[in-house]
Amino acid sequence: MNYGVVSQEQLEKMDEILTEKLIKIGVDCVVIIDMAGNIITAKDNDKNKYDIYSFAALAAGNFATVDAMAKLVGEQEFSLLFHKGTDCNIHFSKVDDELLLISMFGKEISLGYLRLNVAETIEAIRKLWA
Amino acid sequence: MSFINLKDKVIQVKIVYYGPGRGGKTTNLEYINRRFRKQIQSEMVSLKTHGDRTLFFDFLPFDMGQIKGFDLKIQLYTVPGQIKYNATRKLVLRGVDGVVFVADTQQQMRGKNIGSLNQLHENLAALKESIFRIPLVMQYNKIDLRKQGIPVLPTNLLEQDLNSKLKVPSFEASALTGYNVPETLKKIISSTVMSIQRKLS
Image (cartoon, rainbow over all chains, first blue to last red; front, top):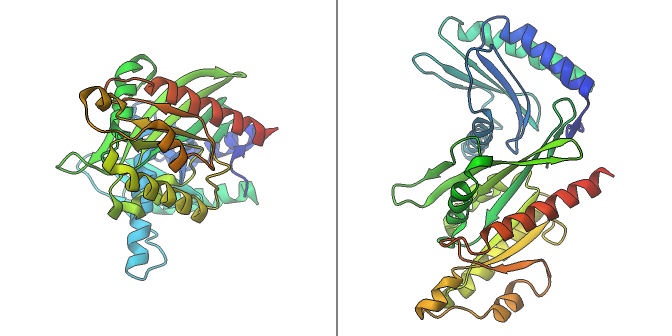
């Protein structure tokens, strides 16, 4: 997969998928980043504004750290990474070896429902490169 | 690897400050953060220990204006310099586009500079990058100590130790006073952008 340069059409489709599958169900902000910490695309609900560049750098570092910990205990990877807060939760999911999808959402969405939608989102995004 | 967004016309470039522990990598970023405050939209992120040593990395995003209609977003990172943190250094180097090697010019640091540069070579090779191909700038830091009578390594010796094979641009600098800090930054940005342009054409 050559994600280094993503075409305008691919990005627009990706944004459509993220809006349709995640923003519309009530996710506050969703970001796709690469493992180097670059932002591929980001969508939000216009209410919550985050510093997504710093967020992406920290998220890539966080994921890489957890990945390294998985290997130390003999796991291939920890596929689910979830941080729970009082008002905001963060869910990380691997799209493929290079890309990560991160969703920030409040308490009105259940984790199960979010995971279901994230799985569908990832499936749809993978098809863009197929 | 840089990321180019054709829709929003944004290029993201990752530059890593690398070098031995307590060499002044974080101090470089702190100076840049103060001096270029207007071009920096967010706070500098520092993940450090209680003893103020970098634990994971520092991160500073930096807007560089436009090239060919694209907004250039430079992401500056440092690595933790302490020997035991090599696993972390490898993680931070992932997807790097350009490197500033910050050498410590204090006389007793000669071996540590060489060791750190050798490890950079190995770490890049593990990421299928080459120290001979990646845009690289040498910075000989703490040159201000010379004025205080503290023995520092002569620049020709540093060049011989660190730069005789690489032959990359180098600067004497003082991250503390800011001497040659912007020059180092400008040089690595221009080398990196040129290298990205070459890859694209």
